[in-house]
Image (cartoon, rainbow, N blue to C red):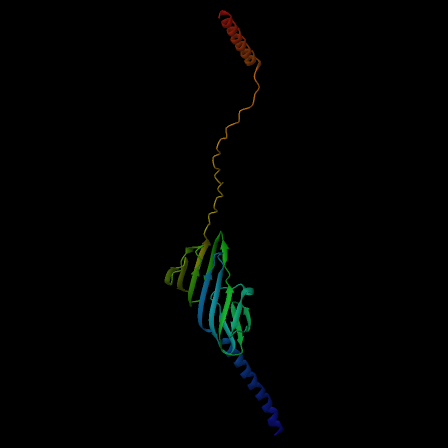
Amino acid sequence: MYHMNRVALPVRSSIITVLLVALIVVSTCVSATDQSIEINIDSSGVPHVKLHVFLEQGLNTLKLPVEPIDNTIIILCGGAEPAWVFSDGLLSIYSDVPCGGVIEYIANVTIDGGALTLRIDDSATVALSIDSDVVMLSLPEDVDSLAQEEGRIVMTLRGPATLVYTLASTATPSTSLPESSPQTPVPAEPEERGLSPVYIALIVMVLVIALVTTLVLTRKR
C-alpha cells in the first residue's frame, strides 16, 4: 500500500502540472474577438486608434492592427483597467470577467520628407476618419466606401493597407498695413507783418499831396 502511494504521488503531480500547462496554453491562445477598429487622423497628422473588443475571462492575446506607441496604450474593461503586457507585437490582457473592452492608443508612423506613412497589418475592416488639414498622397486598394462628412474624409477599408499622407500647407495671411486717410490740408495762417518803410513813405507822400492840394484850392477861392 505504501508503495502504491509513492507511485501515485508523482502521477498525480504530473496530471496537475499537465492541466495547469494546458490551461495556460488555452488561455494564451484565446484571441479577442468581434473587433471593431477605428482610426482617426487629426489635424496634426497624429493617428488615434480605437478598438472595441470582447475579452474572455482569463488571458486574452491579440495582434494589434496598427503598430502602437507603447506608452500611449489605454485599456478599459467594464470601467476598470485590466492588467496587460505588450511584447513582440502582441497585446496580452488578463480579464477577471468576460467584458467588452476598449483599447486606445496612438499609432506609430514613419516620416520621410514630410510624408507620413501608416501601415495597417490586420485584415479586419477599419473605419478611417481624416481631418480636412490632411492631404492623402495615396489611397488603399480595398476601399468599401468613401465619403466626405463635415469637411472630413470618411472611408471604410480592409487591411492590409498602407496610407501615405501629409499636412496641407496653410497660407499665412499677409499683414496689411491700415490705409491712411488723406489729410485735409490746413491753410497756413498769414503771418502778421509790420508795414515796410516804403509803404510808410508812400502814405506820407499821399497825405502831403492831399494837404497841399487842399491848401491851393482854398486860396483860389
